[in-house]
Every structure is written in structure tokens, then in C-alpha cells.
Amino acid sequence: MLYFFWFVLFSIIEGVAIFSFMLYTFRFDLKKYIVPALMVNTLMSLQSYFIREDSSMVFLVVVINFLILVFFMATIVRIPLIWAMFTSFIGYALFIALQTGLLLLSFGRITVHMVQTIPIYGYIIQLLTGVFGFIIMNALYRLGIGFTFDFEKFRFRKEAIVVASLILAAGIPLGVLLYIGDLYINMTFLVICLSIFFYYSLRKENEENASLFIE
Figure 1 (cartoon, rainbow, N blue to C red):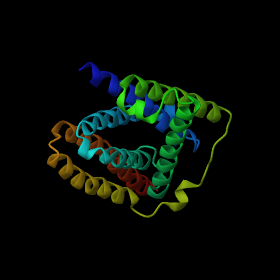
Figure 2 (figure 1 turned 90 degrees about the vertical axis):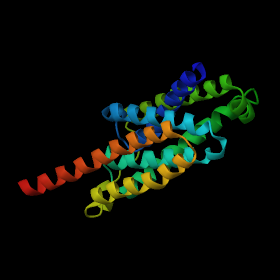
Figure 3 (figure 1 turned 45 degrees about the vertical axis):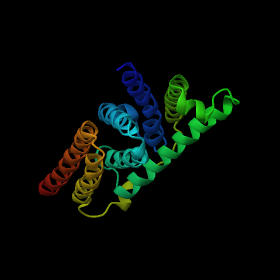
Figure 4 (figure 1 turned 180 degrees about the vertical axis):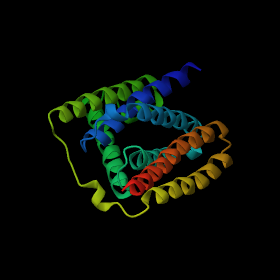
């Protein structure tokens, strides 16, 4: 139970870096999305814990987390799907680069093998990643440094419906895989997460339809 608590806690802290890179890099204020970001971050950490318990399905962690980030950007931050995939990829890439840099700066005191086999070293790297990732990106955001694009330029018609369909489509095969892996608790977390995105996606479509009706 104690291992579960520390794993989830430091995974959440680590996740702060991913959201910081993903949002601040493109001039989105993390504070504006802090509540759904924390909810999604927590669910990501929980599903990572339960999947990692089954070594045969570890590869799913990165795949599922990336899909979750894409849906977060598309349904909650509300940018076109193409940009959602791009920003999620950049956020993940910068996150990995930071962790790699921290390991290199340890000059061999902390190795990948130590992080993978000795929990305390993993927690240290996760803590440093989350703290430095947030501080660096928040500082750059406050200084006005980052990339801005005309995101709406690449939005196609009825995209909200397409995104909602993709969420459902993604949930089916992932749900089957998790069911086969006998990970019922993890499947529950995944369903909750996808439900959040599905709700935001449909709400977005309804708001767009309402605005057209008013006009």
C-alpha cells in the first residue's frame, strides 16, 4: 500500500512536467486548465501503476498516456486534432529530454538501471523532473517566450464529432486489451478518463451549434 501511494504521488509530480511542456511551450496557461489537468494526471498515474504491475503490458503505458494527452488537448484545451497530436508529441519529447538530461547531469550517480530497480532513485528523478519542468516552463511563459500558431486554421468541419468518435474507437481496443490482461481496476480508470474527454467533446459541439444558431 505504501509503495502504491509513493508511486502514484511521484508519478503525478512527474506528470506536471509533461503538462507544463505541452501547454507553456505553446503559450497556454497551465493554471487555466489546472483542475482537469490534475484529474487527468492522476488517472494517468493510476493506470500506469496497474499496467506496470503486469510486465507483459508495459508497452501500453506510453501509448495510452499519449492518447490521453492528445484527447486532453483536443477536448479541454480545444485545439484542432492535428495540433493536439503535435503539441502532445512535443510535450512528451521535451519531458523525455529533461529526464535524460537529469540522468546525464548526475554523472553516473544515478543510472537508468538504478531508476528502474531501486524505487528511491526513480522518485528522485520524478521529483526533479516535475519541479524543474514546471519552474523552467512557467518562467519562460511569464517572460513571453513560446510558440503561437493559428490553431483554428487547421480545424476541419464537425471535428468535435470526429474526436468523440475517436475517443470511443480508442476505448474499445484498449478496453479489450486491459480486459484480457485481467486489469479491471485499470480499465475503470481508463473509462472514467475517456468519459471526461467524451463529455468535453460533446459539450464543445453543442456550444458551437448554439453559437451558429444565435448568429
